[in-house]
Length: 311
Image (tube, rainbow, N blue to C red):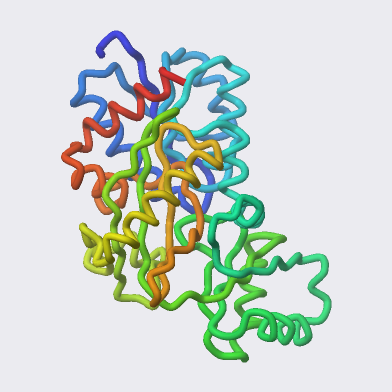
């Protein structure tokens, strides 16, 4: 692979910059170990010219969050005619936007928790809006900023007096937010790799010391556990695998992605969201799922690069 020049894009300007830098460095090392001619670039406003100067054969996008995972970088690379890892412009934009994701999942009949959408420019009577939300969804309820990752801008509200502050905190990140019914159950994730014939990797059960799998739990050693195999029935595992593949294909994902689920007490899985550029750090879920399928981190990264060249 030494004749293939790979550029790893990482860092950037989103709230997930630090995680992206860690993902990018891990990918860089793995590609080096596989014998690629590889370099890295911290994404900024001048990066287009730098990418042109480097003239890579393929770009490995290890960016998370806005201006990286949302279709913007993908569009730039399309215009430059440079192959890149992961999903295309439209899929990236839709999956990064929780509002659009929820609408498309509902339209396609893919189970997702009941929800409503709040818009900042319509948020003129907080008390009434909070009351309407509780009437519709009850408590607990989950409030999510629409276009953030790593659980940034996400709040679980269990008491009525916490609802307005949670909504207003979420509006600090986005002008549209999601309020969805809280599902009391098991949190799962299913990593999927490939293009036209995607492969679902072993399902992971996630437990966290914090109230939920938030930013601190994700990236602090000892704050979470990835349990493989997940402690679910064979029937539930089959449902999750089928829904993960269906969601991946429906959204138009390519290369790799991660589909997150909650499973209720009756064993019914609900799709929460789709991560089109999931983390690739030492604590990340996709590398763990790959290892459970006897795929090393180096092999996984190699497969993702090959899928970019095979689009």
